Image 1 (tube, protein in one colour):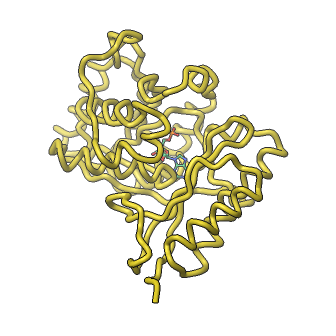
Image 2 (cartoon, helix red, strand yellow):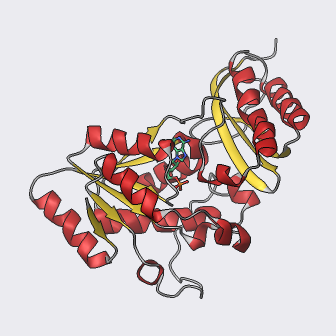
Length: 284
Ligand code: AMP
């Protein structure tokens, strides 16, 4: 596995592969790799000739300094795991190359209005500007044919799809299913910050989602059911919503059909997200 941190070397590597007629798959990550990331590497391997994975803890997408400082960093382990998964090139760009003006404001920002302003965007101001800006830069430097993102961050996936549509990037965005631990908890780099007691409470998220996935009801009923399960588990709920999977608009009780349930909350100060499919039925 090749390892690069210099933008020009990374651009040249990707360019050389494209010129040689090989398709390039991109997997952007913030490191602290786990089986969720591994599933993206596998999907990328299956769909592209060459896989480039990036590890960059992007400060522009953290609304909270403390969260940024505490974000886990495990480069040695990440390197081994990426190599085992057949990643061809691991890119670990430096902060100075990605955002030369940081910590001063970077004048250029990509903003996805609407779907980037709600849920995570409302609770963490500037978060999706940071995400959209870094993803646009990764696309610009790499020029991938495919880019792989987890449904775990469902809103992020919707923001990236919108960004690709609006800015005309020639890349196919591939959404990959959520990988969970045996107990149902969605894998996340932040899970290492949970005590065993907090982890037990965190299971309320997947419990709420699997309960509503197994029952069809009005959107407002599903919303209330999720909130009750989350409250009972001792989760400090940020939101529990049922939305249109493309626009992320909350569903009304006059709607029927497949939708997405989105939940987020704090457990011992750690913000956790999860989501899953639901079916809403119209009120009679
Ligand atoms: P992160 O390193 O947390 O920024 O995540 C990098 C990519 O991995 C994002 O596209 C995430 O949605 C995806 N990802 C993180 N956790 C999971 C998971 N449990 N299952 C599937 N994809 C995931």
